[in-house]
Length: 225
Image 1 (cartoon, one colour):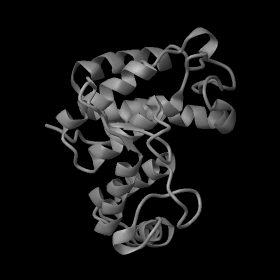
Image 2: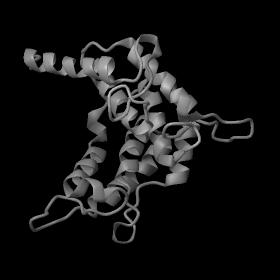
Image 3: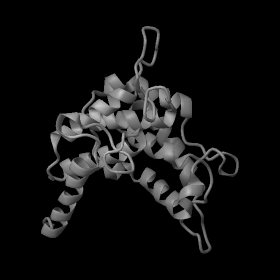
Image 4: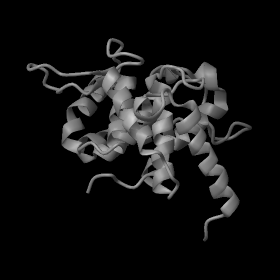
């Protein structure tokens, strides 16, 4: 199937807006992204933009290299480095600075590093750390352990990292989601509004994120061979 000219043109306009109008800074001073144009970046919003730019580049659209360079500088600014006694070697990330580290943000930061070309072995400690802190997916009693924000980024990141950690994560994810999908009735096929942040995105958002987690095998080719 060929490329649709109007679709390509519209997608390119979206990318150009993202890099030239919305990203903080200009030219060599570019950094991250937030909700409004040119605002000081945060890791959550910047993560979405990096995934978008990576997908655009893979699809053959033109992406300003300065935007990728700026994204790297932003990640550097929110990364908490490891010290000599740190068995995980750093690679932990905060929201708008390195002092607000969490397992969710570290999943986002390491995924972004993967997309931006970092070596698997250089990220292994950071990935192991966020899984150790946040755990593998687990539904819990009445959905009390559900955290699809974390599961989404964690699934994408651990999938790319591969190995035994991915096998453990993948089995837990499939069990948590397939065993708790609604069966029968008007809500058949959806996932209930339970767990972290679910009050913000509702049943539709909860279901969309669950589907995206289960589609990780098809959405991105492995970055590491």
